[in-house]
Length: 302
Image 1: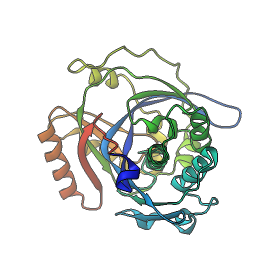
Image 2 (image 1 turned 60 degrees about the vertical axis):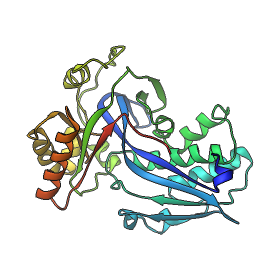
Image 3 (image 1 turned 90 degrees about the vertical axis):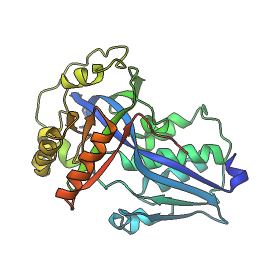
Image 4 (image 1 turned 180 degrees about the vertical axis):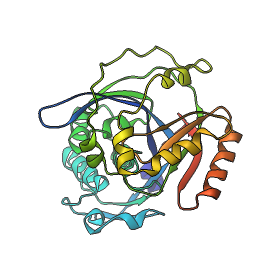
């Protein structure tokens, strides 16, 4: 059923997981060059689009309180990526944004899960359908890249290898769905601060295997990689070490790692029931933490 028939469209904005994150260099403008294998979980925010006489925007959900006035502003001067995406696409497509957008914020803010970029990608995805704009439209990639480096990778919410400053997207090896637990210690971890603390050596880009579908292949491959932002992120939020230690001792956890610039960590599990049990146990012992279990590589837009 189309958006125009329902007059309401709900789009899922999944958490982005950096399964590994290597830093391979730095540009003259200060931006770091990355090499990362990215996948998406069935845990995330949601975007609702419905008809309105003029553009409206509101934020709800457990983390709505973290947004200030500029983030709630619905004008083109808003600091919110969702609002910026609406106005940018409306201008490019020569559309009037007579829609009401509701963002339900379920992911912690500044948590390394790409929430803002995923939210913006979700609203772009939804408006393309709402306005019947082909997804191959020539201006779309440039528009997304100007909004934010992570947004193009988030549009399809499918596994992808990300290089450059996030602007180079390569096909990812085939991967199966895998149970996952996400844990955030309740502390924001600002990307700019983490990158400013990075003083490690740069890595050489590597070759990826064509497939990571066989049992244990993904874990064996990831165990040889790392997140190069682990040290600076832990200096920013020391609780990250505790999160990883707790994930590592859970029954069935085959790999635990920081995602993105932190402070969220993920644990991959060999069994869904064990993942749910681990999440329940961690949350009970740490009531101030954000803990969710789900599946990696199982996001659904609608």
